[in-house]
Image (cartoon, rainbow, N blue to C red):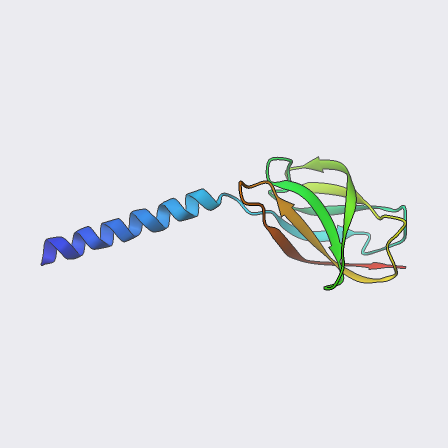
Length: 115
């Protein structure tokens, strides 16, 4: 009985560990400068795990419409994005598409105002 509980705990630990390793490092945006922009502006986004190996695309979203933005520079701790001319004015969240085998759209806790 005792041996089976220890075995069960060990199996549970191994399963949880393998799931966490398989998930890898998720991209996380922490700030955008400037926090207000207009069409054609380049915005600097800071964070972690933002390199090409984790982030495939960046979008601005108002919760209804997702607009893909051009990435002009990309590194592990920063991404520069260009505001598209077609984007309407308003307050938008940043969202990333991951590069995983099953890509995920992840809305970030960073907002930008477009004039």
